[in-house]
Length: 342
Ligand code: NAD
Ligand code: WQD
Image (cartoon, rainbow, N blue to C red; front, side, top):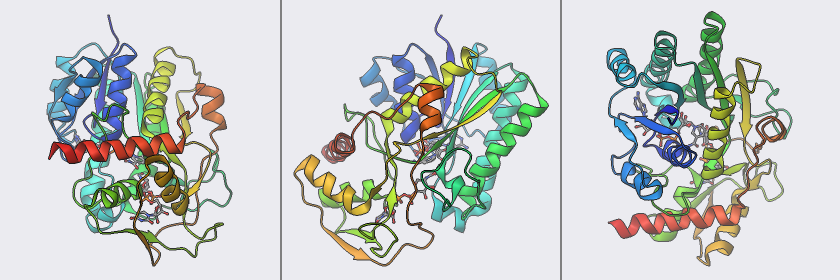
């Protein structure tokens, strides 16, 4: 019998790519999502790639009663991969209570049912945002966790603490937090990808929307950073490589390969690219021209951040494999596929 796994936020961007990898690796997947930031059609994309329609439960994880019912419906659940969260940094400044309510309540409810229904394992979506502007680059897992610059960032920092406290109080549960750097790109089939609702905040979807003609020009936020070309440097990780890491982390928990009940891993490529390098590599990968203009810095942005991935390489045996050029090519194919659907 296939191991049964709950994927919260599984119709979202990273969750859908992970659901695909899990199904392809022989897992049975139950997606729980309230579709607050994703669409039901994503399930068809997952089925088109894998040939399997995952179980789908549409409800809000803040609803503990409903979550309990779900756990009773799937008594064989062995693990939870927890993606569901609100994630827009700027929005979290405007509606902090909604962010704290959604991201904490859903996590606390999941930790409760893990204890109550003997679901021992969790893989948690954390973020490099917990490091703030790091003092040293690349960032290792031992770099200090800094005071968050947004309520969103704070939910990730505190969520990691909540998980550790829950584990201290209940020795039957174990978890791995994965700190993502900047996930980009889409499945090579272009059946699933990122679906930004409204104007995208992140660089790559804004760039692809500019090239397809939905946006007038890409605004490059600042060229006076302390970096070689003056534009901000980030560690862009291909979403499918990221998804694969979740399967490995999950297997590590299920096979009890790690002795520690709680572990943290950085998931990045280990290499930083500037905004200008992203633009140039996109043009090279696709043959398309990117119209851009230099704008003032975006408040809150930092010069540079990229991961030290030694721990994930060594302990998980995982490494980002896809080149930036290939990755940006998938992002462009996805943008074109989205445009054809309309
Ligand atoms: P996403 O918005 O595409 O996916 C999240 C999904 O969770 C959505 O489908 C949404 O409908 C669902 N959801 C939210 N609250 C819910 C609730 N209370 N009940 C049920 N469903 C709920 O986001 P994503 O980019 O796939 O991010 C997934 C996770 O990774 C998030 O926890 C995010 O904070 C984290 N993360 C994302 C990035 C990034 O740049 N995308 C970087 C670091 C960490
Ligand atoms: C990347 C670079 C911008 C848009 C965010 C969250 C972080 C994490 C990942 C969840 C920066 C520049 C951007 C644009 C630009 N998410 N840029 N023009 O800010 O590194 O991280 O997503 O945990 O918490 O803050 O990603 O894609 O917004 O920006 O020039 O239109 O691109 O200044 O240098 P960021 P991003």
